[in-house]
Image (cartoon, rainbow, N blue to C red; front, side):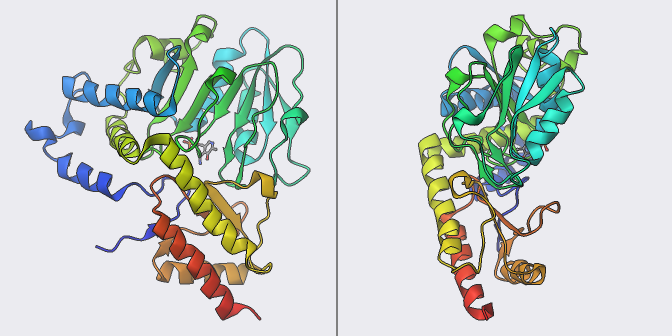
Length: 361
Ligand code: PMP
C-alpha cells in the first residue's frame, strides 16, 4: 500500500506504526478472544487503557496534581457550551479573545448561558493576527478569559498568553500536545483528540480541581464537570475505541521524545513551509501576520483560485492529499500535526518550488 502524505486539518494523519498496531490488536485483543470494542467499559482490560491514556496525557503535558483529567464526548464544540454552563451561573461574565472562526463560535455559544463579550477582537483586521498580551481588556465581574490557542482555519497561533488577572480557559484543539502549557494561568484546558492525539470522538479536558466546588449543579448530569470528575470519566459509556487509539498515540509521542520532541518537530515542519513561501518572491502569499504564524496550520494563497485548484490537484497526483483550504476561506492549508513526517513536509516544500518554476510567468 502506498500511503499519501496527509495534510488534513482534522481528523488527520496518525502515526503509521500506531495504525498497524491497532490493526493487529483489533479482532483479538491481547489473546482474550474478543475485540477491545466488544468488551465492557468496566472490564479491567478497558479500564487499564483509559487509565493509561489519561495518565500519559498528564505526564506528557506536565499537568499538575491539582487538575483532573477528563475524557468526554461532544468534541470541543460541547465544551463551548459546558464552560459557560458550569462557570457563569452566578451572574459572572465570560471574556473571549475573538481571534477567528473558532473563538467566535465559542463566544456565541457562551451567550446562551450568561454574558459573553470580546475582550479583544481581530475581526477588523480580518482575523490575521493574535493580540499582544497587553491589548486584552477584561471587565470587572469576569469569571474567565477564553483563548483559542490556535485558529485552525485562519492559521494563526497565540505565542504569548494575555496578561490578565482572571484565570484562562483554553481551547487547544489544534495545538494540543505540541507545546507547553502554563498551567498556573489556566482553570480549564480542552480540545478534541483528532488532530495531534488520535481519532475523533474523544475530547480531553483538564479542570483545576478547586473550581469543581463552585461549578453549576443545576445542569443535566452529562453537562456537569464535577460529575465526570467524581466518576473518573466513566459516568456513562466512554468512546472506547477513540480512547484506545489515543492511548496508543500518546505512547508513540512518549517514545518519540515527548513534548520537547513534538515542539521541535513542529518548528522544523512549519519553518520548511514558511521558508518556501518567503523564498517565492510573492508567488505564494501568507495572509497572516508574521508574528502570529501557526506552526500547526500553514495557510497560503496563490494569485488566483484557478492556480490554487491546479496546485491542489497536482500535489495530490504527487502523493500529497488534503491541501485545499477550509471552505469558508479558500486558499491552501497544510496542517502539520504531530504524526506528519518531516520528509512529508520536505516533499511539499520541494513541490512548491517546482510548481512555482513551472507556472510562474
Ligand atoms: N476549536 C478549534 C480550534 C477547532 O479546530 C475545532 C475543530 N476543527 C473545534 C474547536 C471544534 O471541535 P470539534 O469538531 O471537536 O467539536
